[in-house]
Length: 353
Image 1: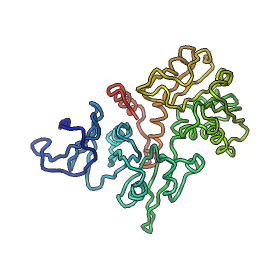
Image 2: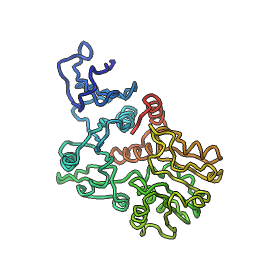
Image 3: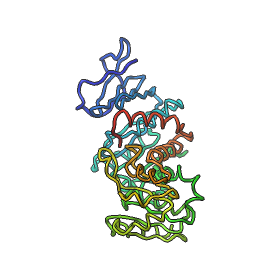
Image 4: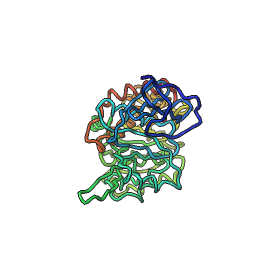
């Protein structure tokens, strides 16, 4: 069965169920445009998702459970591709949909998960902190980080339903670093940026990697101070401080791990970088860029040219998705297979979010 490209990219939304127009001679379908280059084809039996020229399909029946991404915007997210590919590979009876939600309807969207029989949900910008108020339970990571990216729905024996908020960004960030703990332990860590992404990174570094010192390098020093204060109880023996980009050269040179949590270097501004001074990098360092499109950013190219070990943001993207998948299904995501599909998608479309 071949999915046809829609005639117009202006209609947005999704529909489960068939209509009168045939996708083939005997299968009713509805074709729904999501963006100019992404659309869904939905029938009573088969869901097709297209991002660029890459398709995933999930068989839909009466027992199929929805999983949704709540955010705004979500139109260019690759989470549907990641999760629907996983469902197809593992035979999971679920379908993952990206659902743009305006702020005024956030409470209805989250609470509606209980009555729609959803398997779970992801939460992305700008709602990771705002959804805290709607949770019945929080994981330790979500409570400490102060942000949620994953919601699971627990149905109790008495028929009540609970929403549990979790933060798998921490696990996603740490996934490529756990085998490098010995290199980082008792060393110095530099984090570029003090925004939302830095919260999960700082928590993960302090909780699992045991550095001697962590330096937040930021343009907004007040935000850096607030971030450090929020994690004072997690710091333990680690010293945590902050610097501006203008004064951080020595900290960067001596860091064993450097993490970029800023959007600098992201498509379509690939030529930008949070740290243009290549001379500060060296072979003793690990440089980790949370940007995943492009997979090899200017920051990583500069660090690699000086012998540093580099990690791109695809590993965190897949790591957090894998952790969410396990919370919802109890299964381990086939990360290597999904990574191949994701890299092809980024290479084909040139955009990701």
